[in-house]
Each structure stands twice: as structure tokens, then as C-alpha cells.
Length: 143
Image (cartoon, rainbow, N blue to C red; front, top):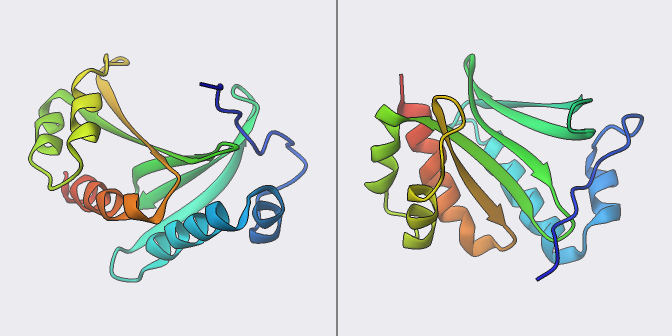
């Protein structure tokens, strides 16, 4: 299995729909557009901002609800990676969500980073977006 290659590494090229259209095939670009339709849904009240991070030498998108980070998004050559972070206290709630069991099992095996546990969703198809929305709603509901 080949290693995923992170995209958007040029600090001078800010991510835009055209930049992303140029790097993705039609299928993955459609998934990207659907993710940003979800983010832009007025009902969810999310905002997003792209920033270039020198430590990782890549552009990342931070998705926010009010002042709270809901998830981080980065682009790989074959997928869109979303990273949600939970505490020990809120981690258990993920297991109660109506999402794919593989996501839950992978999350159970994650080692903590400091006080946080990362739930990583590597999205490459529209079928995964239902689970993605469930995790967003849960993360938003947390205090």
C-alpha cells in the first residue's frame, strides 16, 4: 500500500476551488465540493479558514463553530483527511454515534496525544459523508 502524499505544500499558493480542481480527479473533487457544502450549510453555523503551517509545511483548513475548533482538514493525493480531537471524557460519546464500526474501532485503538485523542477520517467517497456529518454534530454539541 502506497504512502499518502500530502498536497498544498506551496506557501505561496493559497487553496481555492480552482487550485483544488487542478489537483484532484473529478470524483475526489466532487467529494471535496460536498464537504464544503456541508461546512457551508447555514444550519451547522460553521466557518473555515485556510492557513499555511510552517511546522508541517502545508496548508490546513480549520473548521470552527463559534470559537471552538470542530475539525482540521488537509488534502492528500488520494483522499481528504479530517481530524477531530476528543478528550477522555468526550471520547466515549463517539462510540454511541450511528457511524461505521471501523471508524469506532480505529478510534478505540488511538493513543492519546497529550490530553486529546484524534479521530481521523480519510474521506475518498460520498458514502462516507453521512458518518462525517454525525461526527461534526457530536463535536459541535460538546461544551
